[in-house]
Length: 289
Ligand SMILES: Cc1cc2nc3c(=O)[nH]c(=O)nc-3n(C[C@H](O)[C@H](O)[C@H](O)COP(=O)(O)OP(=O)(O)OC[C@H]3O[C@@H](n4cnc5c(N)ncnc54)[C@H](O)[C@@H]3O)c2cc1C
Image 1 (tube, rainbow, N blue to C red):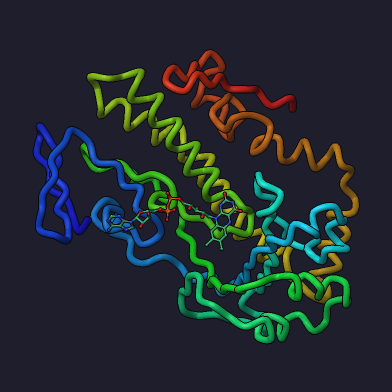
Image 2: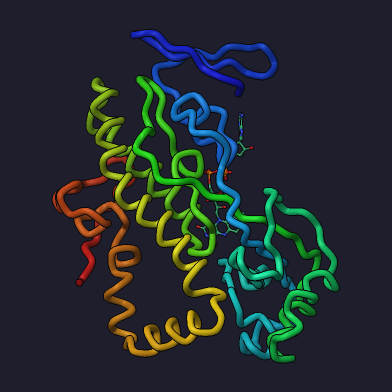
């Protein structure tokens, strides 16, 4: 899709093929480099974070019964639903001011050799370096994100997912937020079938505080938790070690303590507890804290 036009009655998407598609609404779910966002917000390209992440997949079934550290995938691990596809995520995330990889250009899924990955992790314990040896077909991403903006809607056009709120995937939340967006939008459209402007505005108002919080927190985690050094690292260690498990659960209840659509999803006033998600059958679960 290249661009869109709209009038009071419909919106028309213009495709690269020259074809035009007309409908009642256009949902811009076209990712980080969204063409639809270019028109809706006109806020320029994404921000290159300077953080680099290397990813690989360990599909070795023989590894399945061993502990994460024995397998060598204890750091930045991402479990997939199927054991044989359990994913090894080694996130070599480096703040800009650290010299390891002050990446300045966006990169997505570029193949990279094991030796290249190993270079940045020479300081790790041998067992942790096994993470890299267990991986196959390593790939590299230079992470990009967006500043939060409330401009998600333009008439009959709404943004969703990365197109609206791309965050650094340091917090592993981008796809989660995109799915929450979709459920929320579906509910709002179902609740206001003949009032698309109301539905889109309610969707935007409900989703913005939570997704903005995720965007900003993702940046803060990258800067203050992943790889600080010296005094910065000592401060991080002091703050984090002073918290109990309960403290952590409580601190993150706004994110993980419900469906993301309930009253504690980040801003209590925006989503009443009685909200029922008619189309999905999902009912919001309230955070306990
Ligand atoms: C290395 C890495 C690790 C990640 N890890 C996690 C994680 O652990 N947990 C998590 O929740 N998230 C994670 N994410 C983030 C997650 O992948 C994204 O947030 C999520 O895919 C966003 O979904 P989306 O549907 O908005 O966009 P996308 O998945 O990018 O989908 C956009 C779609 O639009 C299409 N498109 C693009 N432009 C056009 C156009 N002009 N016309 C028509 N179609 C178009 C694309 O081909 C694509 O199919 C990670 C991201 C990266 C890069």
